[in-house]
Length: 432
Ligand SMILES: Nc1nc2c(ncn2[C@@H]2O[C@H](COP(=O)(O)OP(=O)(O)OP(=O)(O)O)[C@@H](O)[C@H]2O)c(=O)[nH]1
Ligand SMILES: [K+]
Ligand SMILES: [Mg+2]
View (cartoon, rainbow, N blue to C red):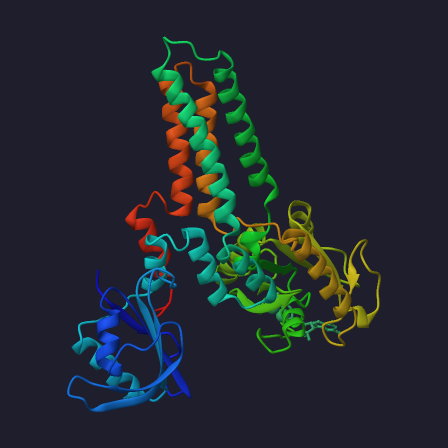
């Protein structure tokens, strides 16, 4: 196993730069660099020197021997002065001493390989680094703290016990085993399948908290969709003009709703398009509307609701506004009167959007399945438990239980396909 190093802080000029090291040669490398190995787990001030004893920096050094370290390996942290020359000099000395630059996510990957955390906790670590809102950070912390790992671990232990009984049953078929054993396995499998199924159904919102909500603004040309986008995000993100058919492409802008990140998408006005470009714009608008978590349907106070928007409203979760309320005129049923020009009703609209967002991504703190692969693995497990329930031969039932256990193992990284690890750790930054 190589000894790796990377900057844990952002590269560039800074007050302090933290260089991390991990791997079997860490102790030797550190002793060379700092003159001697400092006492473990205590910050020590040392002059760092390169291989020809030239001073590199006056630094704070932490020696973190394994296995009680982040990676599980012998590790160290060097708190350097954050200048480019210092960091490069220390990097060059580390290479001269036999260490190599780490790849993205390599520290955390080693932590997973050494059993310091499972794959879902590692995903929590990435999410925590990426988190932009408080809700995302809370969810990431739960994952990083082993929230999903311990749940899955509990299921895996029960499954292992059921499999052991099943194998005993096969082995001792001839001899006298209590007749109730078979029934006990059956009810155990059923109970486990139920619990996993319930988790799949009730664990909602975690993916939305992680990835954000998709809100599409749709309506007739000139309804004021672009004006509304600009008013909601507080900047001139989209072009506004009195000419119908101004917006062609989708214009996206980010918005945070009650701690949830959202992407607000302005689209082309819905109508029989005048030309090929507008037709493509309308096609994109409808497509975006069909895929959105929430459609923000924009009607206009004085006009009768246009059929295309009404048709979409019937199919998608919607918040409906009647824009241009400043001009007066009747407000269509169920619509919130707003004015993108005067700002009237925008507070109410924001509150409605927040309420819808909260419905879609309840921040109850219970949701853990934040990635499609989590659900996929649990569905595979469930399918195998179904096979086990349906199996007529004890051997086939044991096979299905083994497969179910493998599916759970893929979720936690215990059953590791290299390509899954590669994909997950590619999301990481270098130094984590
Ligand atoms: N009085 C009034 N005028 C508005 C309001 N909102 C938008 N407008 C005007 O309506 C016209 C069209 O506004 P846009 O925001 O470009 O409308 P749009 O729905 O994006 O139009 P397309 O992109 O062409 O589909 C502009 O002249 C805006 O100034 C409003 O609340 N009150
Ligand atoms: K317009
Ligand atoms: Mg527009």
